[in-house]
Length: 341
Ligand SMILES: Nc1ncnc2c1ncn2[C@@H]1O[C@H](COP(=O)(O)OP(=O)(O)OP(=O)(O)O)[C@@H](O)[C@H]1O
Ligand SMILES: [Mg+2]
Image 1 (spheres, rainbow, N blue to C red):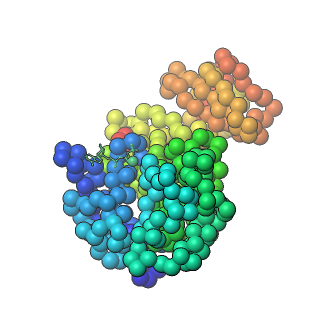
Image 2: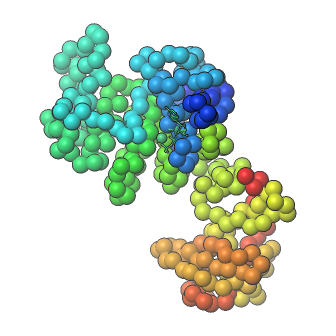
């Protein structure tokens, strides 16, 4: 394998379950060492895609390559990938160490005890659970159980770790901590991570690249920045970050204007001169978010839209109150014309 060979590649992969086209004719190349997220709503084919990479499902048509080798039809246990499942199942009757070493102990020939112990210690250290080997899984918190599931996958030193919503069961705070841990872990071990999530913030904050899916199809794959700044259509713009949609020149297109690109002032005369859109608006709502204030405003012509105003731009004019009549505007570069799909 040379450096440009994809770790995993889909070539025109489709998967049909009866009438349902779960994955529709997708091409995807996962690059070595990257952190790639698959993002999309429930039922769009994320888990099915992962299962075909792991070998738990075979495509109805198309081919799967791992490190340049066609593995279509090859079963899961013969692929150099490991999957952490959406509903990760630890064995409750086994200790943490036995859960982690489960994959190694199934190998034949079985590695010697000392080697297994060392691998378990290493894997537990990777997920910061040193010394927890003797515990039962029910003696662990949700986050710790999640880390055991990760250690169990990492112990095999897979070329790719497939993570199917690994943080979904965790509360918000723990989820945030684990996101940072996963990123650090990925950098440290240098293994390619492929994360499935329906949480756009999670995908954007953690990944080198994000692949947005809709109804079985990959709509766009790119860096978080690319998806945010150059979405290919309304669906991606809406899914990735917050935005406002306004009518375009025809029903087939929309204008997207990101809320942070909209400026507000006490009156239209006070808006910067170079703004192309200038509207009188009424403040409907206001939320303080520390460095930013999020306003919902309404204009007679365009209806309601959102404005994200950084604290430093609230020059002199101060903060606007609900019910105030003010002005909003933006530069023509802020308008992005997108297919209305
Ligand atoms: N074994 C199966 N038999 C029949 N239909 C299936 C099977 N597995 C998945 N599907 C269908 O395929 C589609 C995609 O399912 P998939 O599990 O890949 O979605 P997902 O994106 O992972 O959703 P979620 O975010 O809810 O986990 C859904 O319509 C689902 O009902
Ligand atoms: Mg799923």
